Amino acid sequence: MRLPAPFSHSNLPLGSRQAGKVRDWYDLPDGRRALVVTDRISAFDRILGAIPYKGQVLNQLSAFWFERTRDIVPNHLLYVPDPNVSIVRVCRPWPVEIVVRGYITGVTGTSLWTLYARGEREIYGVRLPDGLRKNDRLPHPIITPTTKATGGAHDERITRDEIIARGLVPADVYAHIERVALALFERGSQICARAGLTLVDTKYEFGDLGGALTLIDELHTPDSSRFWDTSARTDRRAEPVHLDKEFIRLWYAEHGYRGEGEPPPMSDELVAAASERYIRAYERITGQPFIPGAYPVNDRILQGMGRWREVDSEPETGSRDED
Ligand SMILES: Nc1ncnc2c1ncn2[C@@H]1O[C@H](COP(=O)(O)OP(=O)(O)O)[C@@H](O)[C@H]1O
Ligand SMILES: [Mg+2]
Image 1: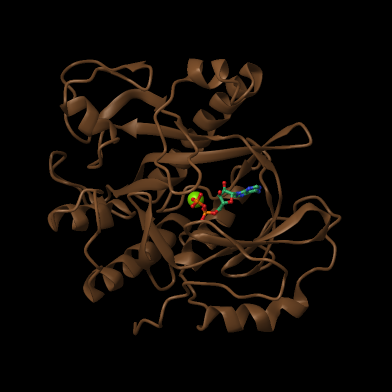
Image 2 (image 1 turned 135 degrees about the horizontal axis):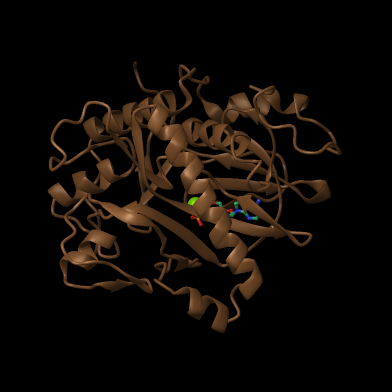
């Protein structure tokens, strides 16, 4: 497939554009928000470039997972009017990122394997046994929360006790978050396992919506999660096939970059390979073919905006009937 120029930046006539590293958003009336997932890719807490079709994969894959987890916890998604856009409810985000890990792995300074290999055994307030090897399954999934950094700062490790003591999240809400996060991870692991994939670890974000705990942002995507293709794996000690962003981090590590200073530019081969992996992750997880949306994405979104719903008074209708 010949790759189009990536969708790096949205420009929609919906009032002021706000932007995170990967998403742009526009606040609409009635507490709704148009969340536009661009092709930007971030790692090491910075934007590295853009990968064609990555935004569509993230947006549609999140919608797939929100649909399949709404019995566990309500989520922010109202509907998906375009492959790269979700209309969501604005929530008050809890200022923590809830990382759940089923395996000990990683290459960055904060990854579980890096810390464990340095001799740490009490990590994120969790006691780990001796004798674990890289990519081993943990005795049970663990939650390793971080602060949610703003303005380009790095997320910091934090424990449950600190979260509560600092008043970041009330104790009863945090206990609820922990139960929900583990249930989501179990559901994600089951659905991935049926597709021959391992859900290695992931990150959840939660918010408050009128007193109700609500899942926000994205869910079980190759940006927020590590997936291993375990279907063709014969040697458990060999480096697994990554269907996620770890593939990018490994490329940077091979080029001598681990997150300090200016990163080397991504090669065309890396961009093409990353696009292919994101699409493969989508197809493997959903069991559906990826149907690439037309580029340029911004023009396509503009053309379809007349068909967005004026008001969304109904309860969540999911995305399946939209796309
Ligand atoms: N429903 C929601 N209500 C409020 N904030 C949200 C919601 N969904 C996602 N967000 C926030 O919007 C931003 C999404 O943009 P993103 O590019 O992922 O940001 P970041 O650079 O922080 O990862 C994040 O800060 C996320 O916490
Ligand atoms: Mg994000």
